[in-house]
Length: 179
Image (tube, rainbow, N blue to C red; front, side, top):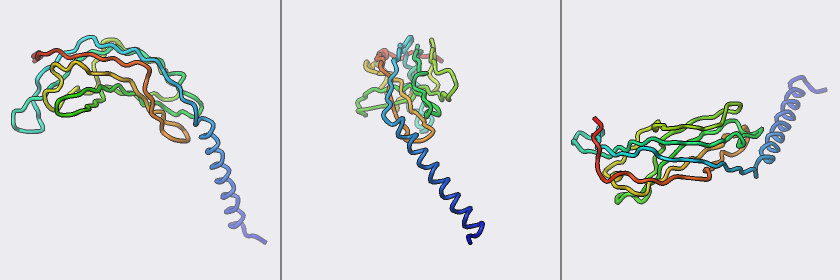
């Protein structure tokens, strides 16, 4: 009556529909789970140096912030059966005369399911340079460090969360030559 091709097509359609419905139910089961984490951040050393701007050949100098960071947070409880991995990053926010908001990512890490999601760092130097596109770091008295993360699920939306606890510090009002 029906050919093998028609029967296999119908079976494939039913299978795909069932898997799609199952994935949607998995997504709905973790939709309203919002968990926070406490974060302890402190800054040990904070100095500012002048550094050449290599993007232009004008001899112009930019500020380079050099800091050491103590970071502690436990993120194991953020994992549930629908979380594949976490993308964790430490960012700095500050204001300058030129820009109302400057945001710089200083450090990041990918934590996969099954890995230890315990962040304990002492006297850590940033993974990325703390550059300012001018002279906005020297004497800046309100730089805020914040730990944030993206939750990458197996099925569903990417979510963004920020830890409970940030740290504000100030840079000195003079330059230090580290060369």
